[in-house]
Length: 517
Image 1 (cartoon, one colour):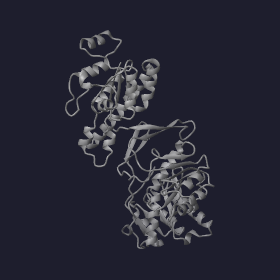
Image 2: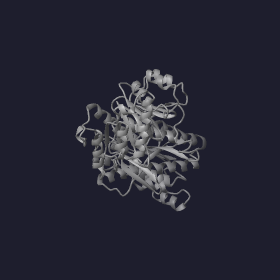
Image 3: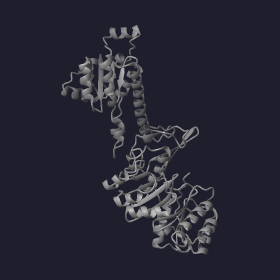
Image 4: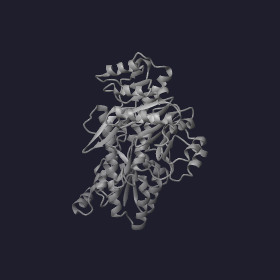
């Protein structure tokens, strides 16, 4: 029995080859893998000794030869195939252990050149994997070190791998080469600007108990491309497995958190923020976010952009929350929070820079929508003012805060707030004045509970889209709103500006809308 071993990922390969030799197998290998095996005392035959032809073109050509592919592809049950091998002095190869040049890792490096990328496109490796996988009835194909143990176990017990294992490994090999080819095709198409094909490459991360509802099956897949603020790479420190709805809500929370550089906290229910605030510390941010809506946060998702300390954990512990996320947790905070066995606690990477060119995918019946992620936010500035009343420094800060929040609320979206804290959120209504009414009434109720009057607070308001009429400005004025930020762009902008001037409201147009369907 002969095995051809040529791997880029060399973890465990020496022990794997050593065991094969102990079972009576002959090892064939190439270049770096061959030298590693030889240096480790494993007897090995060079591929060039098998083919009778040296490696050429800096190793680009070494295994592309009939003595390799004939040995892999010949069917053992067809006499004509076996006679062709005998007539040409070709012995069979019964196993291929190959993993491929690190193409994905190469293109993920900062400043990688196209020349570097192209040199890491494996040719011989995929060819051998495909040849071996095609002839799986007779040939074992191994492309992942994780399978070494199973292969050795079966050889030890049966003298060879089982038919079932060879079929499974064949499927894994084709999956491996398909993903590899997709990564190459995606990269090369990006270099040449060809959009008519779109390839996806995701790995199963978790089987979910169910989807949005118990009668729906669901799975969670992670992208080969790592991103910050992602649940796909988050480390779960406590609690039950994440559900489909947990993942949706937690992802929404992380998208809001990444808008802020100062200490920030937000609570999310049904993919909308129910309370959000900045503070001098995580503790203060949480107190303000909780005060914004003490009712809706029940059973919600909470995310911080700073380490959760013991003081903050003590405030969180009495509440029923589904998920808690932060870049880190102090030892004392984690010990306290882990006493709540069902609370899902996630440590999330918030250090890696956000990729501004990342894409957002949405499935529709029979198709897929792809767009650039809405990762940039125009900064609110005095020059955007379109009314006679000009914003104060405090109002500008408040408008900047609610502008970042409203971007992450389902359209039609209105957010009311002040002093780095939301007081009211109106989400997902069929008309904008309906969302404004919800946000303003919620703010009024929150303040009334503290013995305060919304009409004297000088709150500010943000809208994710323009006002088609002046009715939203009229309603805002009735509740004492003093400043508004919105994209502008309506054919009736002049009506809204005139109404704001009449009511003494300052209004800013950012020129950028943030619909979120």
